[in-house]
Length: 136
Image 1 (tube, rainbow, N blue to C red):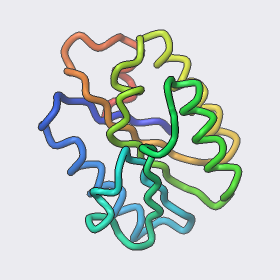
Image 2 (cartoon, helix red, strand yellow):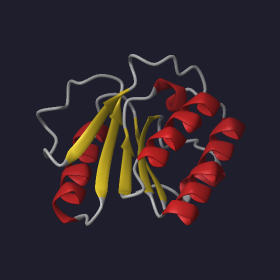
Image 3 (cartoon, one colour):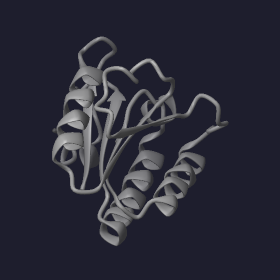
Image 4 (spheres, rainbow, N blue to C red):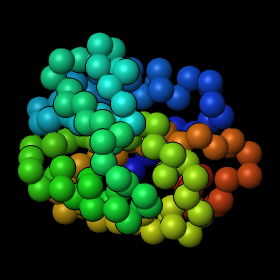
């Protein structure tokens, strides 16, 4: 399953992501991963959650980010949930690229059973039609 939390900067997306991740950390039978651009949230997350910061990697587009996610999954087949927060390459992606990225994540979900929750700094008004079914 792929889910999105949308909103403009300062609307509480990260707080909600942390709450969802921590709940998963308490209840998941498998592993939970939280991907962020830096380590600022390390003390907010349940200690069972693996925080991965992307700031040290040169992720320039959704294709390279997708490869990054595949690498994470290939190293740990027990991952149940991946939370993706604060990634400008997702928020700034063109709609057709974002749609392809989501389809690739759905394939990963079907093949490996990983659920994805992604925050995206976009106003809910005027989002493309394909994205509406992924909102939580």
